[in-house]
Structures are given as structure tokens and as C-alpha cells.
Image 1: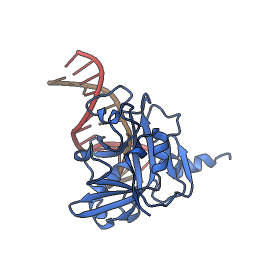
Image 2: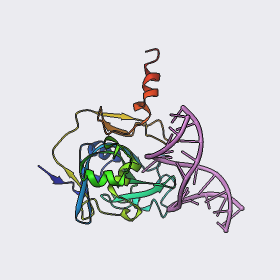
Image 3: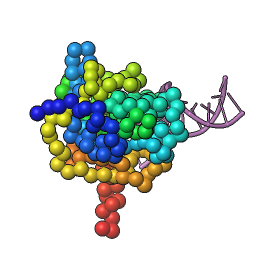
Length: 206
DNA sequence: TTAATGATGGGCT
DNA sequence: GCCCATCATTAAA
């Protein structure tokens, strides 16, 4: 069982889409080759949420978040990293899901080459890393999630256990639990609560 | 024009 | 754990 996610899948509340994207499979067609991975970590952004690019209204960059759902929003940060998002909500409402980590399934060889120096288990466990591994750049901004370049499928597999947390790397909007990830999955990024120091700290006095 | 900022990751310690 | 590379985007000037 494998079905291309319909546009209607994305035309819903962003947090719901972010949660339901866990376990889905993303494919990237790259000059005849296909790279792919299972989505294991996401974050929801949108509307007036101060952490979202949409919070100050539509700008040339963020306009795509206000447009029709089912398209990629790719932007550049920190002078070196691209971030992949899926546009959500019906047209007119701003929303996007940041894809933070994948479990590599297809094209590991090419991913490893692109992520030269990275150990096999750290190919796509971070939003910047996965864009690097998949070869996604600003040129992919606006690409459809229903082919030909990008495609997202439901292959029937459901995540074992889903957990939530505050989003990573933001200074505003830290109170909402809009990060979703598959509990215990080895390819989930090294977010604060996964880091050794935090785990030790969390255990203190407990 | 210019300056501040950032939804990060890698390398070194 | 800390440092820092490196530039698109934005707002202010």
C-alpha cells in the first residue's frame, strides 16, 4: 500500500499535519536517481506565531506560506543551511511544517557522498543536514509535493509512539509544544532533551 | 545602503 | 561545551 498524499492532506491545521507527517515517506528525484527517507521529526509554524516567518505578514520570502498547500517552502539560514518546509492550511491562511529529520531509505550512497565526513547514522538527523543530503536548495522553493521533483507518500506504516516538545532553536514562541517526533527513533535530531547533558540534568533530583 | 538577525551544524576541546 | 562560519532577508536609514 502506497499512496501519494493528496493536496487535501496539507490543507488542514498545521499542528495536525505536522503530527500526521510522521511516518510518511519523502522522495526526491535527482537526475534519474531517487533519494528518499521516512519523516521522523517535524515542527509546526504559522499564523501569528512569533517564531514563524508569517508572523509579520506576507513578505517576498514568506508569501508562499500564505499560498496554496502542498508545496515546498525552502529558505536559507545562518549563511549556510537550507530548511525544508511543507506549506499547510487552505490558501489565505499561513502555515508550514518544518521537516527536521528523516530515516534514510533510498539513495544512501549519494547522501553519504554529499554529507562527506558524516557517520552513516547522522545523514539526515537535522533540518540542515537533510537538505544537504537530499541536495535541496533555494531552487526547490515552491516545488510541488506531488511530483515531479518532490513527492510524499503514505506507505501504510504508522509511528509507534509520537512525542511532542517545544520547538528547537527559536527565541520566541517557546511555550507551545509544536515539535513532533517518533519516540526513541535513532534518526531524531539532537534536540535539547535528547542531549546527554539535558538528560542528566533532567534526572537530577528526580 | 547598511546593519542585525537567524526554525544550524561541524570541528575542536 | 564552545566557537564560528557565512549570507538571505528584513527593517531602518
